Length: 165
Image (tube, rainbow, N blue to C red; front, top):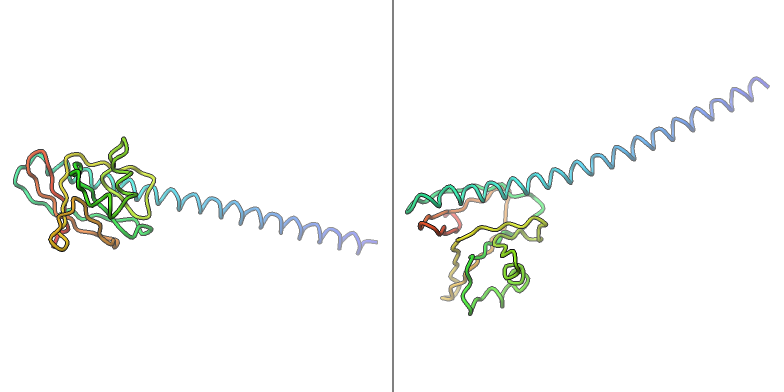
């Protein structure tokens, strides 16, 4: 009888240990997952703040040219800039209709990370242009790496953004 009670006691202890282990793993996974999600949000906010601060700091220095190095979160594979003012015959609507719709919406978003991010990034009075086969486009998109160098040129109120070459 003593052996049966001891065996039953050991089974109960092992079951309790298994349940405890499963709970620790489950809550640990949820905690790590939420931590990683918050880290991605922080990286995106740091990207936005660095970009906005860089553009705003050169705006007051007419004729200046600055190199701005951006750290881009790893989950994004393309960065697009859209000029704050688009001409009526804009190629943006034909080439990138989704970006055009987001740009033309009420918030006038001008910076896009692809796949599209949740955070809206709007830079006022920016000028962007790219010439492709003699056609001037008022936007440009570039594949991203972990670091990207941009050239910022101040023209008083407007800031021209292009790739640093």
